[in-house]
Amino acid sequence: MNTPWWKEAVVYQIYPRSFMDSNGDGIGDLKGITGKLDYLKELGVDVIWMSPIYQSPNDDNGYDISDYQAVMEEFGTMEDLEELLKEAHGRGLKIVMDLVVNHTSDEHRWFVESRKDKTGPYGDYYIWRDGKPDGSAPNNWGSCFGGPAWEYDQERGQYYLHLFSKKQPDLNWDNPKVRKEVFDMMTWWCEKGIDGFRMDVISMISKTAEMPDGKIKGGFYGDYSPYCIHGPHVHDYLKEMNENVLSHYDLMTVGETPGVTPKEACRYAGEDSHELNMVFQFTHVDVPGRFGKWNDKKMPLPALKKILSTWQTELSGKAWNSLFWDNHDQPRAVSRFGDDRPRYRVLSAKMLATCLHMMQGTPYIYQGEELGMTNYPFAGPADFKDIESINAYREWCASGHVSHEEFWPCITAVSRDNARTPIQWDDSEQAGFTTGTPWIPVNPNYKEINAKAALADPDSVFHHYQKLIALRKRYPVIVHGDYQLLLEDSGDLFVYTRSFQEEKLLVVCNFTDKEVAFQVPEEFKDARCLIANYGSHEQKDGGSKKKESGKLRPYEAFVLRQAR
Ligand code: TEU
Ligand code: CA
Image 1 (cartoon, protein in one colour):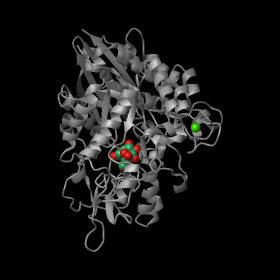
Image 2: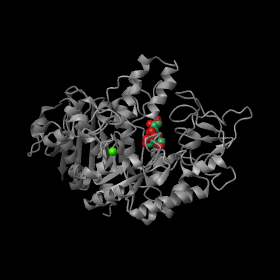
Image 3: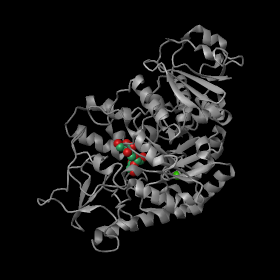
Image 4: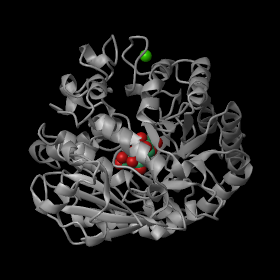
């Protein structure tokens, strides 16, 4: 079987600002990453995806790029990046870059030129429109980070579209010159030896020509989605990108595609679609409530199972899944899907890891997830660093639409800053992340939760991840097996099987803090236990004791393997 490397790989996502600071300025940097490659090697991952490291005024922490071919000064130099590539490759680790080309920074040279001169060479690089006759914005669309999606520019006398912050103007992909600039820049990076791209909001690069008002839903502004997500030419542009750039190199590509359905995913990442290798879908992490995305409600387990199972079965044989519980835009996995109380944190973090890593697709580990890092105990809105949380608090709460008491649990449950606190390396001051003052505070629980302690403890979350990764390398069924959900209606248990040739796996996860009755199906009665989160039950002889007890303990998880 000829399997592309990225189907067998495990990816580790680094948010450089918060990973490791090498020079005491409080900001993570490239040298910091290079210094920790051995840690990642020990974990066993194959690929590192780095959130943006390019020159940026940091309105959105690097997702607003002012020069695609320069390194952000705070992160180091181009030489540091080349060194990182060399050191990573020397250890057999691949590096995937973040490609943010739906928008640039308003400080990018193209935008500076574009706002100067309508008729100049850059005049048509962005999405400019005249206001309405009364001078108001072209339509009612709202931006992802609050406020309207249009900003009036004095210099040019027109409005420009920004689906994110007003310092992130959207590029006009309908302009062939823009596409050529992007493709040339990508080729430049490929020639440097990078191993792939994670493509930021790539489902949003093509917009409809008509831009009518959108429906107001869960907020104050109109919804741009029908006009900007999976727009009319998105697949043409990605095929063009593939033909011009991607197909010339041995890369891994993953598209961040908000709003994607399994059907649409098969177009973006279909085996024969010549676009991308896989996409990130968000249906398992989107739980909109009364205040839009700001919601502290957990998704009920049957709904979560249904969503993940649908992706498993609908992409099977047609496209490839990416598997994740969290990333730099999401709260910490163990706090959201597991149980971060001291008694259950380790157990439930291992349970979640087991549940995800035994599915079909390429697993992504977000930095700190392998330590079971938790959400941050925000004291008040002054603690937020993220533009999205800062604006949301202002728009919903400071404006008087909702009380602080009501809104606070909702925003703290999902604020992106939860994921962005520094990695807890050890129990020294600032968790060993920096010798200075970190740009964002360290989670106070670093004394207990840190990499040094995890490495010293054979039963740590880290070692569980290490084991899961090793299992994936050893048993083809984990990569290739067909997925089947069992006990569909259970609100407590997530149980599924994977089958491939002579092998079959049973994956059993208790998502509750209660004991739950469970009988191992007859066909697994003689199966061996590959991994379990209650150490003593992972016995060489197959863990038979556990299987006969008929009960799962809180957050218990194990995997049985039957070879016919
Ligand atoms: O995120 C796009 C996205 O759709 C959301 O996840 C978004 O971050 C937010 O949560 C909307 O409520 C990507 C990047 O991952 C994110 O960090 C950037 O801020 C954003 O694009 C803009 O580049
Ligand atoms: Ca630094």
